[in-house]
Image 1: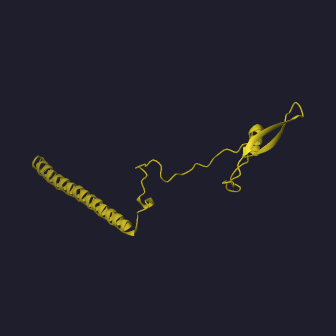
Image 2: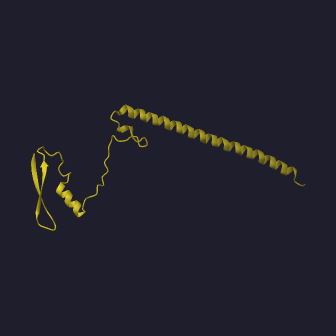
Image 3: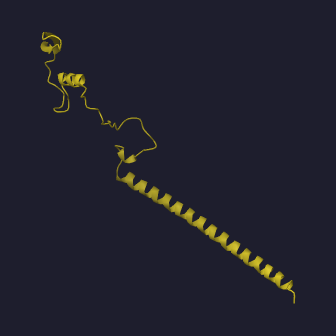
Length: 135
């Protein structure tokens, strides 16, 4: 194990204090330009210039939310599944269209029945008003 010596300057005095830390002989696993060195991190912390972490990580295999479930993200999703989903959606839309047309037809039939009833009552009213007319 190799020890690396870091020299720090104290603000009140100019004496150097030395700290010994173990240093690994293994190659670094950090990705270049994606890590901040410890001295830089400490300097930014002391100066209060740390950058806020605004990026929120996305984990594909976290808790499953059934509200936002997307079957196309599944690893075993293929074109046959897409065709089955398409056919299922088309069947649902056809069923909804049929229900909507049936509801509109029922409303139209109700309006026709009310119109016929109105015409019958109007005819009776006209007939009675002619009978009661003074001559």
